[in-house]
Image (cartoon, rainbow, N blue to C red; front, side, top):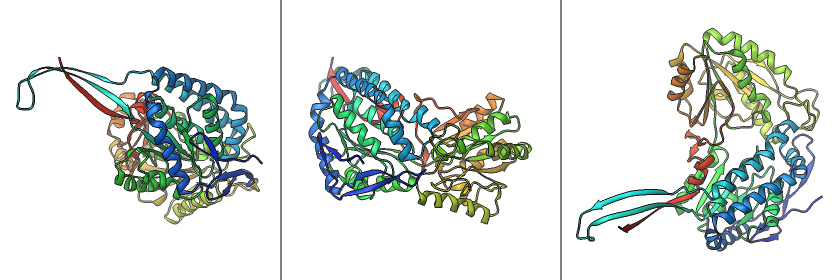
Length: 485
């Protein structure tokens, strides 16, 4: 079994609190032992990033771009090693893993290599200023620069460990920040391998650091450290709230991509095939462990029965099985505790009056692993717990609506506002509905993404935006420089 360590200031170090086991959710076997960092380790990593910050900030953008391109190439070269490790840690199917877990990370570093040399400053028009007691008058010029924030703590969720980390690390490094990575406790090993790749391609010591741990103390130490200027976090809303509170004491800059409960409005003129395909992604895409999933189907009453029947007919076609089997569409959820949590929401929905049309609990043919199959709860109301709270599993709830206004009312009656959807063959109508939705993203007749679009949420779904150039903006501070003409 390979030995994994922390990377702090360019040196490998054991975890100050020992090690802990990383479990394969498909087999329940040990994948490896991760270092259990202490709060002192986290602070040492933050200090190393602080020490490296001035030099990295002065590095020419072209040099930063070259290193990011080397990093992308090195990840691609190591994909045959990284993919099996990521699949073992996350339970991702080979279909999702081979298409997204590694290739999207490569694409993000290539994108932010370009971003490193993108001028995102703003030239101000000359301003005619009269003489005042403050200074002589004249034509006053100005330029708005975007300076690196400084040290960024990159704290990620478990569902897409490498891709999610790349979305934080890429723009942070491109704009001249140094970083401390803190991956999710469930699957940190691929991120330690990634840190090793960063070291090998030539990032200076201290520019990239990684600490891992199963307890919340490590992340808390980074959030509270005076050496950390910004926290970029993807994860649950409850943890995001704690980061927001703790970060206020040192005025941390925050980028928080939190929970979602995607509303999918299906109008009476919708193409049901398109709608069912989009909704089935809750089941077939990483077992519903994705915050952008359309988990709430809000369906016009005229289409309600047909949509429920179509979903019920689709569910058995999504094969539940071992991740390495190319025929598998639905793999395990991340841990035994999370499976119990998902099953609790399903039972809670039944107890509150929902109709359990498809029950995916404990698939009989899977003797080992933390599996939940496609599950469909119909005849739901917006007051049910399973409808209001993020389940983060392959569970779809269906709520009937009287008309478009009613559908919008239901959709917006949620603490979340990350990613919603509208299905209608009248795109003008769909666009009008989309504008009324309280969500950072709205997909019309598709569950596809545009990675150049700003990504983030309204309400309890987070603070800030990343993606494309918006990721560059998120990791920089505005600085105005003024001079007499």
